Image (cartoon, rainbow, N blue to C red; front, side):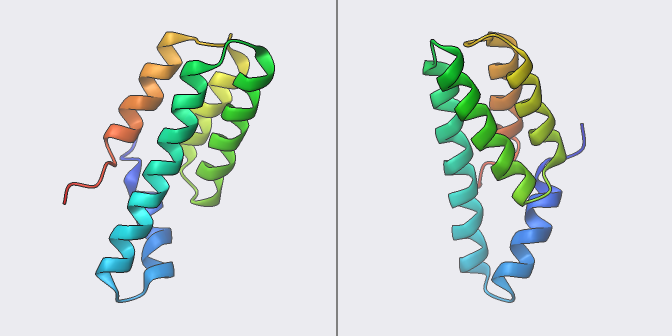
Length: 101
């Protein structure tokens, strides 16, 4: 798996231009949104909630061409609600791009 943050950072750099503070804020907002979907995945007990959170995560990842994260969301869509292995992989992927300010 390539460093997940590369694709995200490239898209955020275009949006933020030469404003490093805006870049950091946008990056933190991306991670927060992805973590929110991961939390919803972790709390899902039915197929509908699991699918909705996985689709939202996939959409967020696709917006920033984070193909590895989108692939993990696809994996979640194929799995059962609460699948611990995919939840761990998504969490690890997000840990790798967590802002380090």
